[in-house]
Image (cartoon, rainbow, N blue to C red; front, top):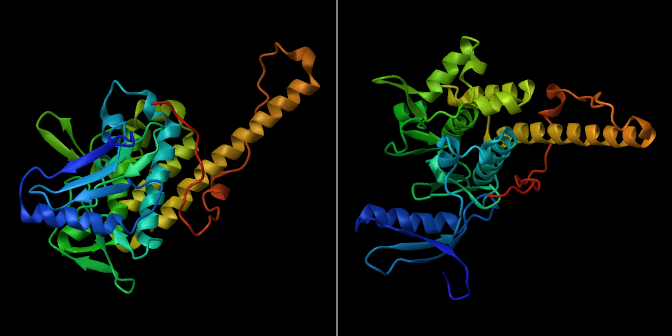
Length: 317
């Protein structure tokens, strides 16, 4: 707790190591360029102590990984929350790639690096291995770094990290949200499987709805879930050039959420109108709701160039 009463989080290096200090300094440099509602805020740092310290805003509800994979925590993982969180993370990455002062590649996108605040809003964190890149450059040539299960196969083979490498990692996070499975999981005792490979194979074999999380199947509209699944498939394309950009991903996810909101407003309006016109039928059980519009017309809706997200509903932690 600071003297003004604010609760903060302290990130402390586990050991005195030059590479760790370099990562901490890099994180300060990167975060000083970023101002986005879905990126964790760096409040201060101390690099003069034996072990470097970084001071962040405190994000109270833990990681997205915990909320997806902890079976006892179903309240936070409704379909609406999953879709909104995916949209918020996509918007943050789109901002890093195309709207920050210089393009920034995160390089370690995964569900453990996505924090959730007290209203379950996503906050992308951990920029220790992130890199700024000159506007006229398309890739970084580096020693391969990343997390098994999220690592772009193209980057692994070439050592060239592009913005599409972040897109691949985000695709894995989308699949986690859809299936509730970890990026590397046990299919059978002693047999480990890559979630990305398992997901792509299941789509090819027309078994998508067999591998989805039960809550997704129960709550999600089929056309909506399929749209997110096929977006994830495009993000996981082994050819990076064929993957969408994070801006395109954000536009598609925002389009789905806007379409969903329009349907809700239309249904609510109809129910109110029916109630006013037919007060004597107050106890009728027939539905007056009608769905409007199609996914094809909604996913391509134009957005403002700034990848800042629309205000979302509040959720209790």
